[in-house]
Length: 299
Image (cartoon, rainbow, N blue to C red; front, side):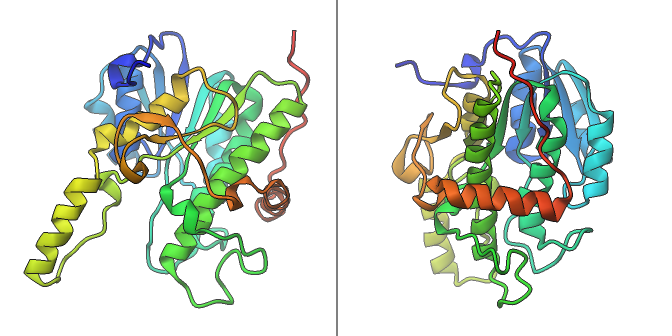
């Protein structure tokens, strides 16, 4: 089997691709590669200024549009102005282990940005998507658990990593339920997911640590992690490869932390269809955005 690299990405001329969070990290690298292959790439970013800086470093047909996934009004405004035909929607943007805070709509920031914002965006745009929706999850989903009694951490002591795991588990449950609904509608569009492994953008800092211990940590980080460029490959693989709906791509190396992209497994919680449907219903109620009734597109 041929190893997937950035040069494997086929020509994307004539295609329109939206990448959320494309002003930095793996989102920026994903957008850059797709633009270099001829796609019209929309960088959907919270900071237009930072997005323009990123766009200036990319070849090809790139534009910047504002999207703040932590504000549903911004999500609706972006969707209203989005193109009528979108080939690929890449739900990449996210936040990781911030101090406790809330979105403009009152959601815990990680769940609100990583899941609810992308849930609303996808629901608003799905009727225009022609090929697929790619949602970026994380190895951290394995530690996640959906607490329907306290999705926004208003009753429990806030634990940033547990909240992150919940949001990344939600990404996979969303992908599975989205694919189920697309299949029921007879749509050729697929929903897939990917994770970047231990990309350097997500590494924990060691500021203030004992120098000897910090040295050991940095050595472990170097052994397990990979660059932003390598971290973008599973997302690109999910976006352009011939794979089934509800596939999950990630690095094929040690503990899925690094290596060339392959299809990978997921936790048992991420494979629970009842939890996926319940989360979908809760997401519609909390965001006020309902998934449209899609017509059967089969020819």
